[in-house]
Image 1 (cartoon, rainbow, N blue to C red):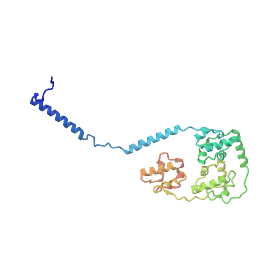
Image 2 (cartoon, one colour):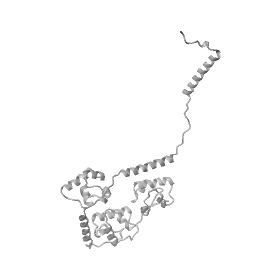
Image 3 (tube, helix red, strand yellow):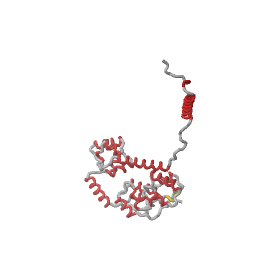
Image 4 (cartoon, rainbow, N blue to C red):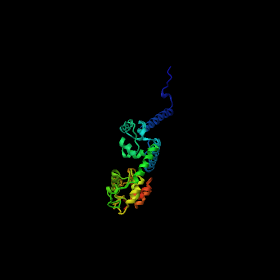
Length: 291
């Protein structure tokens, strides 16, 4: 039996209704296919807020990385293991040299001897040597040797008492200053363009406080060095980085601050930089100006 009825069975109004419903469905399908319903309004993003947010994330990441670094405790460098050497940043060759030296039942008794045996770089030695802990008898032996050395005198005459004009031979007349230290004093003086503060001698690696006191008893700052200051507003990155008291990170912060304020009106504005080394300000501005 045929259950389907002809559409002519419906009344005229019913047929019109069905045709209208079909037309509406077709129109809606066409609108759905061809009309773009996406919004043209774009959300404006504040680049300054994003930059601040990214900066905060970077700072938190640095803090987390710093926390993860293993803390170094005082240790005797004669008993550095392979793993300990790796933690300290030593290469395999440097560790092997120390182990080979120790096989002869010999010991290093100072940071200088450690460097001589392992041939580590000055930068690494400066980083780890403060944690060196030698036996008490080694320290006592050094003290007795220093006392004996301080009682000896050199009869060589000096050419000047001006620390900025003294020669390498002049510095060698001081007890505790040999060829290496006198060379370092001359090189560091050249790097600074001359000593302005007496305590700048304490910045020389390997120069002990007692030796510095002996030097200053003989040599004083009598002539002020002539330093051509660099204009921080027009200087290049390399020129500012040449400042003996500015490292790469500080130099970058100075340039970021300069870009932010457009121009420094006064050199003292450097103090406004975040994490600026305030204790080095008077040394840094010896070589910089703001014009």
